[in-house]
Image (cartoon, rainbow, N blue to C red; front, side, top):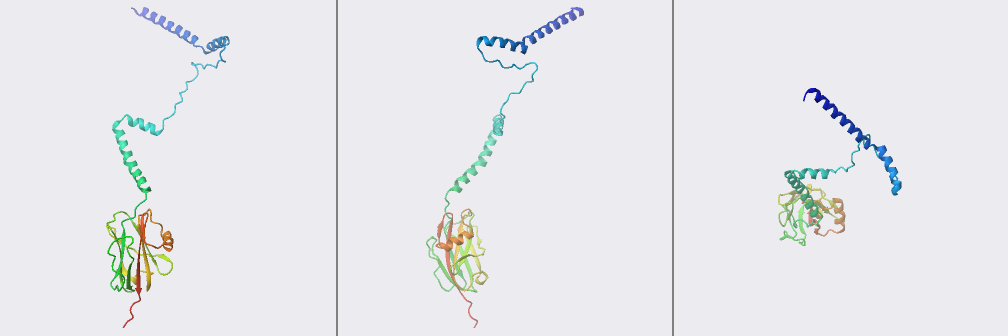
Length: 260
């Protein structure tokens, strides 16, 4: 095929394509379609025709689709990667399981810590009952008689080692009202609390009869000091409460002996 014939054939094909394109546009003319539809519907009892958008001139509107939330996108992403999915499950278990266990056990009624017993002693203890032989909530009150110059040892010992976090509040009473006793008792790793010092250096202790009160319990369940003062003034009997325990003792303090 020579060059002239090739050029002639291309021109004929282009003319045929243009004619076909004009015919398609004419067929898809929205105005003619609207008029045809309006002429046919009255005869068949159809509803009033709605305007037809010109598909050749109106811009296309993107379909309205709901955007997936973050969880759906996250789940779709990890579903395509099994290793990532397993890691995500492991992280969720590691985070949520301890929280659920804490919620379950923290709402349960707690037991008090192991029963504590109190011993009050000193280097010139003169009278009073013997040290408590056993640990029990109904054990008799330990009572000691010391002089104002005596060294005093206050020991709170649990029936079994206490490793959990517990708090201790101390109170004293001489007369009608209980007051906070601002002393520091050292705690051993097994849960034993110990106070050692001179009686005269532990205010408000002074000659006379004193009651000692100690509250030991879990931090989330021990009332505030102000609330404990109210409770002790109303009911100072020792024994267990939900999550804490009250221990009581007595001491008689004698004045310093007169110089000879």
